[in-house]
Length: 499
Image 1: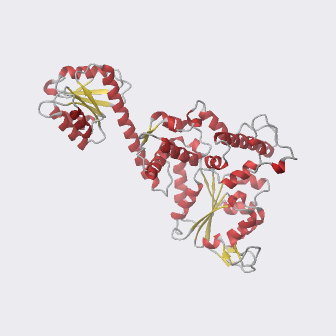
Image 2: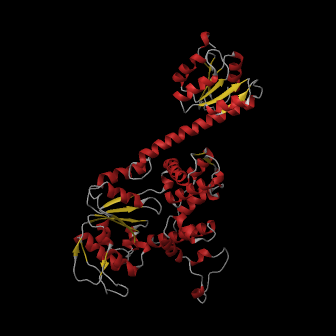
Image 3: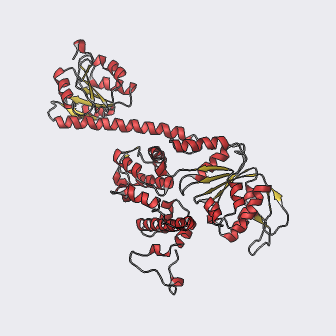
């Protein structure tokens, strides 16, 4: 302690510093005890015997935790605590006193103290644990405030959250091309946020006051898709009891978002091409054409160029759609964004459920950050929602997370589900098809095992709508068989339980 009660730094070198503690007590032996107790914790320890000088020390040194004596000459600890909390509300405080009554403890807690220690200070381990818990609480609060600030900033960009290099590139592309009238093709795995990008393109464009019409092409049967897109006249087909305008007409002077564009059959692809080339369409059953002013934004989770090579998608339509390309990275390739996204969803669902779940502890966050996220952001959103439902305190713990995220090898298994095995030798197209088939079988089998065979829940985790999930699953009838069980014979196929 320097003369006059000035602040004293612990002189021992501390290469593992991760926080600062200020101890304020008018008894120098107590200050020495605290210095020794905290010496090997990796904390920087400051001591001050004059409570009147404590605020100046706090201003200069920015301590994370203060340890205050309750009764001191010149200013009591409770008054000092209130002053500290008023000036530095984020600083955690531990009160110590020789007058260990319930009233004193209650007053200290009401004033903002994190914990309370009673003199004489005999349990050194308790002293150390109490301060370390306070430091951890401060670090967690600081991290949450940082994430909150990031979420607030990112959410301003049309609801898209992410600060990594990959997403910054997406934001810049959207900002650059939003004012164009050119068609945009958004690529990316299911659950990566393709519709959010489409909405951002619309609401950052001069068409923002016009309609934004999303269409899931995979969710509409081929027989209805033409009528849904282009409309029909009364009597055009059985059940057409009145004239109906299509979704392109509904999107006039706005934007239409064609999700899962790869699922559009070729019979309709040619009509889409006419709309893109000429701005004209014809209702089903009509010989008259009408003009529409619509910007087309399309999205796919498939390799559309490969579909063109394989003859499944028209080349001329592909080039009309792919004037501007936006590629969304999978969540496993933007792990720095996971804590920000977790906090974003945590805030949303806590408010929705009226629960005070404000943070995620370090172990849970490490597990979330390490997991491979085959279902991408949509899967993460579902996991955080589940965690908020299950959480019994104010912080999410590993026990609130699904086993596939916290169990050993979760990252390896999830990444194996997201990335197919090496392709075998042979023609590129055949090798790719074989690798994709292996991936789909392993991925869908894993999802169904985790959900107990529940199709709806499995589709949710996969980030797919139910109809598209069923369609993909239907290509692999063996997936729902137990290991070692023979697939149904052709004779039994008609009697198989529908998926």
